[in-house]
Image (cartoon, rainbow, N blue to C red; front, side, top):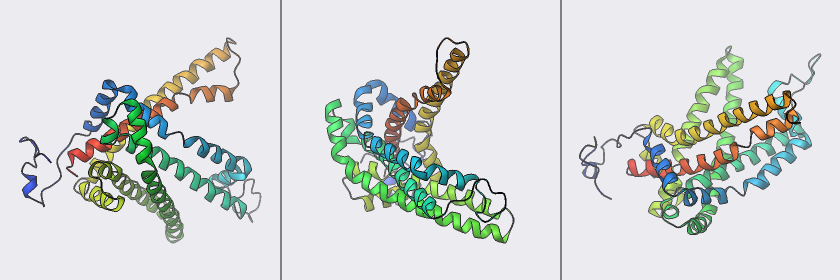
Length: 303
């Protein structure tokens, strides 16, 4: 691997194992992703779109869980009161409701793993160097392992969140509002840790190593400045999703105004559905930018 440029604060790092990680701009991964998107938009977006196809059955599964009792259980979890309380309109879930919530959590975690795997695999160096058809083929070849490992990681993260909620509930019984502090601090630490570990597919695809070795390297590579690394990874997809949400808000406002003026006949549900349409290209573009960000960060940190 070539040495860092002379202007780098870590020049000569190859001879010093204790040197800090290379300083990088938070906008560097975003700029790299946008450059790839401008240079070869089809080859950049096609692998992500192809790898997002497994989301369709997962969305249908989540919809089935919600329609068969999951929506009531979720509402009870958010705003429900004790089942044995007086004048309780919405009760907290129990029995079948809890099972529906667990099943919904597993489906959602699996869907998130599908999105993350699509982004990170499509941003890999082998996929990026291929033609559009070759990029899709190489992405499908590398996707299964990344997807399976990320599913296990996200299920473990979900179990950690449940344990954290239990600890927060116990803390709330000890001191007023202590449960909120435990939840906020714990969730921030879990998100930071999960994002740092999510760099492993970029390392595995580039260095041809296994998931465990790649995860250890990802953890070490982001150890010197974990918050900066996490922000650099999350900023590109967040920017794409923010633009998609803004576009959706504009579409919803225009359709709402047209419906009020009786220029079109649309129900509020139809308007909301049309307003969510920009999220589809937003997720694809955000996934492509996230994959490029992970690979750019891998190179910058000399992982």
